[in-house]
Amino acid sequence: MNDLTQLQIQTIELRRLLNRSEMDPILGPQLRSRLQDAEEKLHMVRQQMGTLLPRETPTLPRAAIFLRGGGVHNSEGIRPSLAGEALIQYEKMFTEQAIHDERLAAQNAGRQRRPRGVPKPGLLFVGTPRGSFGLEFAPQIGEDDSLLDVHAHSLENIADALTRVAASGEQSLDEIVSSIPSRVIQPLKQFLRILAQNGAELRLAFQDRPSRSLAASQIRAAADRLDREVEQTGVELKGRFRGLTLESGGFDLMTEEGLVKGTVADELTEEDLERIHKLTNRQCVASLQKTIVRKIGGPETTSYVLLDASASK
Image (tube, rainbow, N blue to C red; front, top):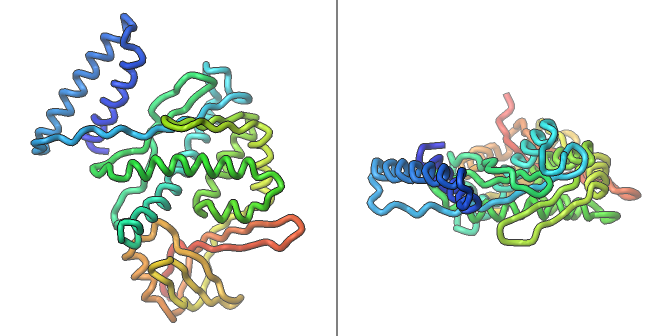
């Protein structure tokens, strides 16, 4: 993260804290002084960059998760193992969802894939709001903040996925899992599992929309069902690559066991697809993510995501 980005985030956070503590006789003056210093440094950095008309600091989209129950002591504290693992898996969900949403945004803009060299999206842990125990996040911003709207939508998509899985009941997981980006499934399972192990309840909150709550019993049932019915593994298969479609991202691979079909990973760029496309009708080794959804009283379904492929030696 460069100096400009750090100072932008610092000034946004200091303004937020000052708005909440302006009347405090001790914190108020301290925060005003820190904000003034940060704004002066931000102005100097922008001048050094040669920006005659500095771009207005964007408003960061925010989301928070509130936990209560096992592992949480009211709004006073939280077990480090619960907070740490929840933070890790929540950011992994966001990263994979945001990569998927960036690809869709690129398609809507007339490109096929995300640009090459674009860094992976990530989250910043920006606060611990009160009300049970809260963990607040904001997407990282780089030189180009045009993806902030996309990443705000990604935070909402994560909440949608968690809510749908937790409310699935007796409904088949097939349709639900197929509507969630494949690479989001594993951290989603781990996120629900760590909450279930601690008997925690979850509330997902946003700046501009109603919050969503999941009871501890819903979380436990969803975690158990995902463990029982959804399996994801990484596999390597050898076979003759029959090609891929650049528009839809579908691929075919003929192995000794039969035809394997699926979609390519969201993070692959146009250059990656062109490289893999040159393997058409050649023997290759393909790295894939394999997802199996088991249906109670019915056949299981298997899907594949192509992570990479190279010519067989």
